[in-house]
Amino acid sequence: MAALKIILLVFQLISCVVLTAIILLQSSKSDGMSALTGNSDSFLGRSKAATLDAKLERLTKWVAAVFVLLTLFVAMLYSM
Image (cartoon, rainbow, N blue to C red):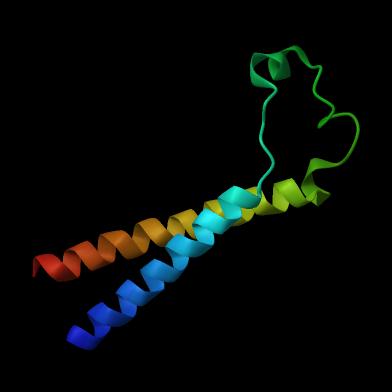
């Protein structure tokens, strides 16, 4: 059981570092409220699904989900 805890903690640490790196690689969304008026070029200028920002955004969601699940599982293991 101790080996499982160590392995899960290592995976959690790796997912934490990867999540931080992915978030730092994303470009800032400084449009603020002006994005609601339709002045943003993300809808007209290029396909959002093919951009690097869109891929990083999807990857962020997946890695964040893995991190949350690992955190819950590690918490359950340590509470036993």
